[in-house]
Image (cartoon, rainbow, N blue to C red; front, side, top):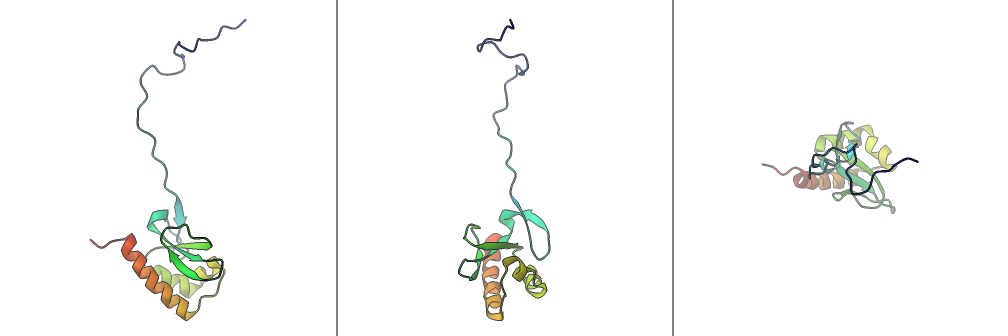
Length: 118
């Protein structure tokens, strides 16, 4: 019959030194900008969302219901996404001129909140 170790006795496979109290760092979720295709942390990017009713808006919390696409918070990425059609393709909707202008304004406001000027 095989002998088993008692629960009060230390195991031989465990190191006798005390374990560090710190937790390992959690990895941040990564997302890719649809315009420039650079991967960054989710908090650095801005989410543009198409709601179930078909409206487009900038979602700063990243939790609004609907289909979303991530962009860098600068006007260049938005312009590139609109010009090449990658934003419309990612959101599966046609983007007209008025909606594009409104998105430019919302993205400018979001850029100020995401990257405050020093």
